[in-house]
Structure formats: structure tokens, C-alpha cells
Amino acid sequence: MARIVILGGGTGGISLAARLAKKLPPYAVTLVEPSKTHFYQPLWTLVGAGVLHKESTARPQSQLIPNGVRWVRDWVEAVSPTERTVTLRSGDTLSYEYLVVGTGLDVRFDLIPGLEAGLKHPSVSSIYDFNLAEKTSYQLHSFKGGRAIFTMPPVPIKCAGAPQKIAYLADEIFRRNGVREKTELVFATAGPVIFGIPAFAETLKKVVQRKGIDVWYGHKLVSIDADQQLARFEVVGADGTPAIKEVNYDFLHAVPPMRAQDWVRKSGLAFEDGPQNGWLAVDKHTLRHLKYPEIFGIGDVTGVPNSKTGAAIRKQAPVVEQNLLAALAGKALPASYDGYSACPLVTSFDKGVLAEFGYDGKLMPSLPGNPARETRLLWFMKRHLLPHFYWRWMLRGRG
Image 1 (cartoon, rainbow, N blue to C red):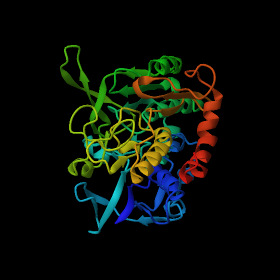
Image 2 (cartoon, one colour):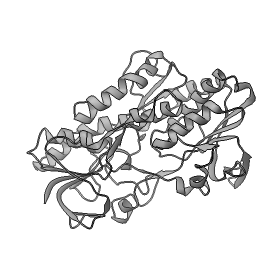
Image 3 (cartoon, one colour):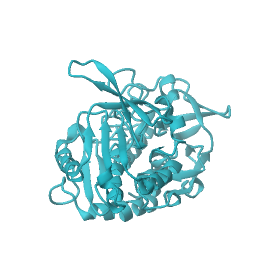
Image 4 (cartoon, rainbow, N blue to C red):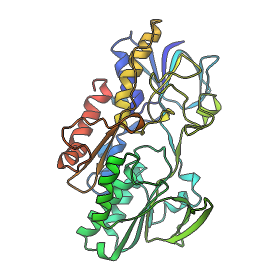
């Protein structure tokens, strides 16, 4: 039996394993992660805009596994919380004393009919994929004009600001290339507002007005026909009746729905109703499972009412670390997560807004002054400081 098993070697799993490895005996922690490559996904927006090459966002997973942590390269198939076992795709079974679920979420292009096939078409792409991010850059820089649509699905999704960030950078690219006047740029969001926190929404409204971006609220992408360059949106009318709206496009940046892995629900670990249905059922403050006290959660897989970002994981990691160590010692859980999340919203190639907030939309700024203002500092942070902090500090259990 492993003392602690961590499922997932993404941001949450690696950073937590690094923290625990400093406090526990060697190989008390087992990390299950099948991937040989680790990605810093927040930079895929800049890859899509042509600022960076995709290779700069990837590193070998083997270089990031903390010393003293056992790495099992396999996929999770099921968890039996009553037996305290994890079944792997290989057929092997791991037993645990405590379990941390940090498997992130699945990006489900297949849930929008026509989208998977459409992504092979020269007019469709998405920055929510390592290879497609680079394709997006080529498409934006070679665009000759017409209707360019950028979609936003219903939340929760990872990095909910990214769908509009790439639209803002596309506007800059089109202007530089002299095709903006020949372009109808549309941001089609399934939501009723541009951003869920009013203070930042006001700033972003000014951004879209300044850029001349047409925002379609309440537009949920439900299918595409790439050969016809046709997108179908579900639009709910004033009387609450949904209708299908068909729109032609010359370029479509599609963001698919996202959800926790199927085994989370099938293992009985997920919320079964409400807005968090299907996500890992943990207490929003302690991050301990609501039914199984020997299970904790971290990162995007958790059903807590926050925004799913790497910044949220940075605040969750010390909470899970402290509470897990207390549980091992038979003590009360001392740490509480306040819902903090941050979204660096780049609005151009030299500025942006740092949206920081917690539960119930509480503003939690770390910089002085008006937290909703556009600043050049944000671009510098996004492009240079945050990647360095991620690789050198956060994943090493320091940040």
C-alpha cells in the first residue's frame, strides 16, 4: 500500500508532490501520470498569436518528477473509494492510505458534431491543443478578410479568459496585416456577459468597443459543417425557447466543452446534480472529499465554484499539503482555500488586465491601484515572469 497516491502529473499533481516530498520519507508518495511531456498551457494563447513556438511550452515529464516520488506511467481506469484502490489501464491495482485526485479535465472536441473533422480543415482551429495552437498562428497571419468567429462555450472550462484573449490578439494581427477593415470579427459566447466579474467586465466592454469586435451573447456553438464553412449556434429567445442560428464563417476559432474524466463520475466521486454536476465532490475550503475523508482534490477536476486556472492551483497546493499532512497525523484540518483565481487577460501585444478574484466574485488584487485597468506590466508578466515562476518555483513546490 502506498501512503499517498496522487492521480495526475499536471500543474496540481507535480506541485503538490514536490511539496510533500520535502516533508515525508522517500517514496511515501506515488504519482500516476501517463504523459511523457508536460505542457505550460497558458502560453498556448501566445503560440496561437505567433509570439512563441509551441516547443517553448513543453518539457519532458521525467525532468519534473520530484526526487523521492515514485512515478507510475499509466492511465487511471477506476477508483474504488471503499476498497481504497486505483485500477490502471494496464490492469495493475494500487492501494492507498490517502488519495489526491488532480487529473485536470478533458477537452471534448468530440461533443460538438463536426468539430473534430473540422479541425483538419484550413478554416478551423483552436488554441486548446498543442499542435492546433501553432496552426492557429498560421491561419491568423494568412487571413485575407471575411468573417472570423471566436467561440466561448458554457463554463466551467480551463482558463475561461483564453477564448477572448486570442480574439483580441487576432484583431491586432489583422490590423498589422492590413485586413482589419475587410474583417467582421465576432466573439460568440454562450454566456450572458463578457466576463463574470463586473469590475473586469466593464474594462473588457471598452476593449471590444475600441477594437470594433461584435459580441454575440447567448450563442452556444452546437455543430459545424467545415466543408460549407457553416457554424450552428443554439440561441435562446426572449421567451426562453431555443432556436438554431446558422452562420457562415471564413475562419472559426472553436473552444469545445470540457468536463472531468468519465471515471470520476463512474467511481462515485463526483457531484450528481447542481452546477458542479460531474466534477469531483470536495469541500470548497478544505478540498477534502465530501463523502470519503481519505480523498482530496486539487485543480481543474474539483467541483468548487471558482475559475479553473493555474493561479487557483497555486493557492490550492499549500492547502491540500497542510490538510493532508494533518490528516496523516490524525489532526484537524488547518488550512482553507478562499477560491482565489487569476486570469491574465492580454488585450493587445503590449498590455492587459490581471483579473484576480475569489469566491462570490470577491476582488483579490495583488498589485496596487485599480485592479481592472489595462497595464503594460501584465504583458511582461504573461510573456516572461509567469513562465519562469511556473517552471522554476511552482512545480518545485516553492511558490
